[in-house]
Image 1 (cartoon, rainbow, N blue to C red):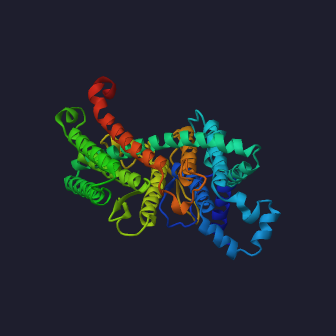
Image 2 (cartoon, one colour):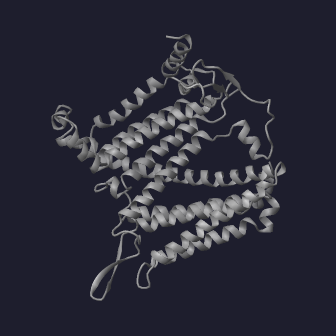
Image 3 (cartoon, one colour):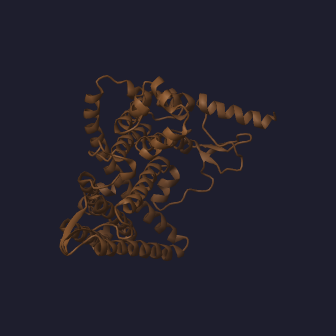
Length: 447
């Protein structure tokens, strides 16, 4: 074995069993920061457990396992998992697995309170020892299946999950508003160096508003009916009107006086997301039927396919992508030195960077926390704790858990409808508040 390869293997072992930063084995990969490497590993843990929960809620996967795994029934009996491993699938199994994942991240959140430097033992545990942490995560997820009085546990844990899921939605919406402001400010700061950024801002804004208006027209055409769907008409009008109001507010002189960098790009991003949430809510509402020519006709459904499967697949797919996108954004884009200076319209000098460590035969790691932590370890794990509860509630269709199946995730649920619709208004309120607060409290904003 060549020395370079031996060194790379040693470093990977140090990553799994020690406090060294994790990196890829390929030396041609771009450099990675230690903080990014750590957050990526925790995100990978989160995604693995989430995929497991999705599989647990899929009857299709369960049937395929029964048909293709040899001695499946005998294996389930030996594991005391019930007939055809019934205790390892369904909403109760998802509750138990997510309970273990939530406990894992909550314990780490408590463990990393007030960690200010990356040189301490608690920071070393946070940034390394991945093999042991993975085993601990598996143990926590498996431990949920051995809890006493499980009926009472499921009843109480459902309400804990609902509260945590709602809180995560609020954080998710706050991240979206922050992302909209950060995007506009970063591109606006680039105008000093190249005027083409004006054209880029205008083009992206136009495209996003076109998407939002097109989505609104689409829903008016296919999700309303002259004789039914009153709520659809009401909320389409309300949400469309609110998007128009916040867009005018963003470019009003009183707002521009206190926030010169505020523009239509943020409003366009918020409008597109509100239109998606509105579509998601309308697709989640129980079907409505009207009597025409002596027959009951289903109205206000997705037009390009019979039934609800097509719209469910679209909403579920987009919702999953947005969930993971928000998770990745909250984990990998934190308040680093470089991002902070970009937000303030300044650029970090080329020489001000981090120390690199050459990893023989592997990816180079930039140790960006030598002078202190650049993000809150405690808050990071707390967001993942809430994300675990949100995944649990989403996969089990919130309060309609007993008959929940992943293939019918958003089929006819009033609870999901009102959650999505309320999320629209919370998102608009948060964005409107970020526009108004500098005008209402100018001294505090300047400080």
